[in-house]
Length: 305
Image 1 (cartoon, rainbow, N blue to C red):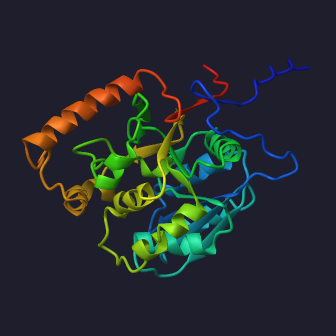
Image 2: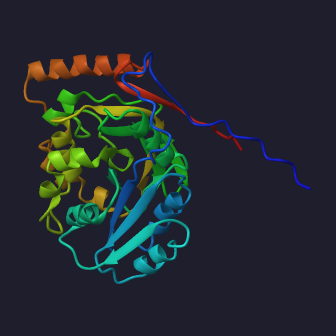
Image 3: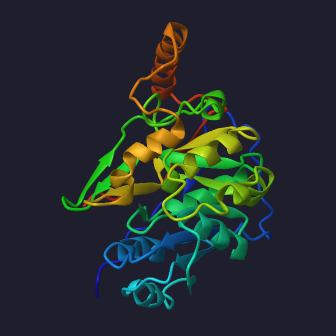
C-alpha cells in the first residue's frame, strides 16, 4: 500500500489589517459562476496550454472558445477537452478579436467575467482564489493579480516580485499604458458582469474590425475606473506567454499609438514629470507593505518539488 498523501491546508483569505466590509456568505448560496472567453484564429500551436491550465481549475466556471473559422485543428483540440471540464466551442467568422470577446460574453451565463488569449495560462489555484475573493467581498467589482510572464521557448516563468497597486485616478487618466506606468495584466484581471454592463464594455468592443483596436483592454480599464477601484490580489492569477511572432509583439507600436504614447516617457510638461516621480515613490512605499483597503492578500498551500 502507498503512503497516505498529506492533507493540504485550506485556502485562507485575509485583508490587510481589517476585513474592509468582508461578509460571511450564506453556506447555502452557490458561488458565482466565472465565465471565461478565448477568442482564437488558427491557434493550434498555442491553445492546448490554455486549455490544460483550465482543466486543472477547481471552481464554478464555464469556458467559451470563440473560434473565427480557423483553417487548422484549433476546434478539434478545444473540443477534445469537453469531457474534462465545461467548455463550449463556437466556430464562425467574426468582426475581429474584441468583437469575438463581446459575443462570447453575450452568450455566457456567469456573474464574473474575463477573457484569456490562446497561449496564456492560469495557475492551478487561479479560479478558486477569484471565486473566494468575490464571494467574501461583494463590494469589490474588479481585481487583478501579480504580473507574471511565461517564456515559451525557455519554459521559464518570470515573476514581478513586487505587488502592483493601481490608482483609480491613474487608470482613468490612462497613465497605466506600459510606458508611463505598468500595464494592467489583462489575462489576470476579473470583473463582475454588472461592471461590464454599466461601463458599456460591449459597445466598446462591438464593431472593432480585424486589424483594428489593439488596445481595447486599455480603454476598457479606463471605463471601469470611472465606476470602481481596481483591487490587487497578492497572488499570481495568470501568466502572459511570450513567444516568437505573437500579435502583441508585431503590433506593439500600434498598441502604444492607440494609448496615446507614441514615444517612451513622452510626458507633457515638467509638472507632469514631477507628478510621476512622486507617484513612483508612492508606489514603492505601498508595494513594500499591504495597505488596508487597497490590497487583498491571498494565502494558499504551495508545494516545492
